[in-house]
Image: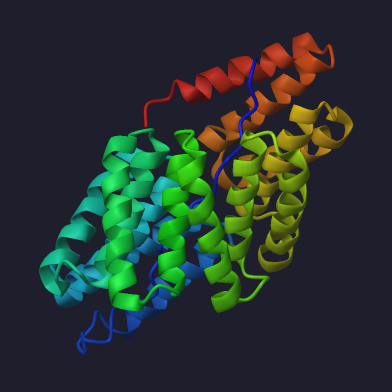
Length: 316
């Protein structure tokens, strides 16, 4: 192992309902099911959420037909759940179908189209296909700014995600102002203790860590972790992201005594919430292996490295 991985957190769009222009929606049962999907997702209960999302999609198809925006909402939400679980092959066609329905039913400049573009772009970003992701992120941002105004949380989400893309590519000069603008909008619009603020803080901290500015990064990582734990509970997958990234910061600085318990807790949360073969689990295993190598525990490190390699080899 020769590198430490941090995880940048995207802001995704999980939709609770259809837009107001559609008076005849998919019905009360669909509304209830879809709200349950949102709640389960927010709680990190993804397996249960998939089952409910599949039922919601079935109900929407039966009640309003395959080309209604409510069907697009259900497709988006089911795709997002598969995406979160690392099942990208299932997620992509659902995202694309959701986008196509929205563009046809709502027009190319509707905010829901921007949300679909954002989520599809995130899928490509996660897979390292930055050439596909960037124009989708930019179109999503342009639509949101025009339709909702420059200070709307959806604009902040697009800014955050585009910043993550540039950070991943090492273009820090582009990433930093977008990340800062995203954080400022979210803090003003949602308050300082919202989970999306934690996400934005995490990503800004990651940008400073990558550039070696550890003194600036650490308090941002810590604030992100505190917000996530308070808002989402100690066992939520987003808490694991903050734990992993703070541990990575300490690993980079050689403070292994601080890093190890954070890494172990992060791994335990991800294994429980996402399953043993999720890419985030591989990230956690790789970071712990780095720590074990650095502290002369080569046998334990090799075991973790082999397990991580097996997870990385899974076709998704």
